[in-house]
Image (tube, rainbow, N blue to C red; front, side, top):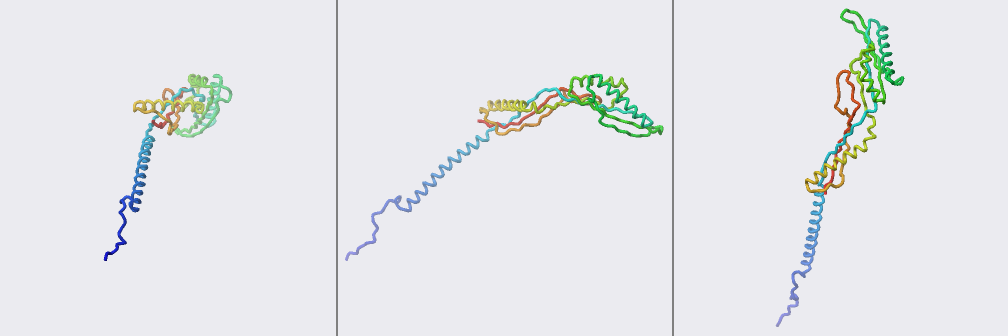
Length: 251
């Protein structure tokens, strides 16, 4: 008797056509594709990040000589006597001499005004009590040329009997900074770009746009350096200076 083997398998299929194999191959293809795309994006991102890091930080300078437009002069003087009335009378005489001095120079009435007074009492080595009256008169003017002339002729105050105390010197101020700021910032930025272009040329790159900029601090100083000492007046010739810090991208 011949037995029938009805459960024998049919003709075998290639392994890649098996359902499980097909799913595995499809998954592998997706993973591989994802790795390729991910690698490309990562590489492209690194290149762009590297390009973003290509920058140079430079400083630009702008300096400008200007003439002061405001002059102020505080004149300190005093008178000492054994009684207060006499000391005050001495100060009053000096005040009249100071007012006449500025009037003779062509300053208008009220250009110089009292700004402070002080009275002190002390006993000298002989045990005699004395009063000292100190007063300050201040000049404030925009007439710089006339103010300079007053400084040159201040010895006349001494000839009139006024004893000038320490600190009696003319001070000059430049008050129009806002008028020169925009042009100076533009000059400093231009100077910074020139420095960046030199750097880029040396490194084989091109200067791009500004990434970040810091204006910097404006300083106003005497053109020929600061002066100091008793009776020494400031200079009306000033130097305005600003330094900007600019980050430029490099292409």
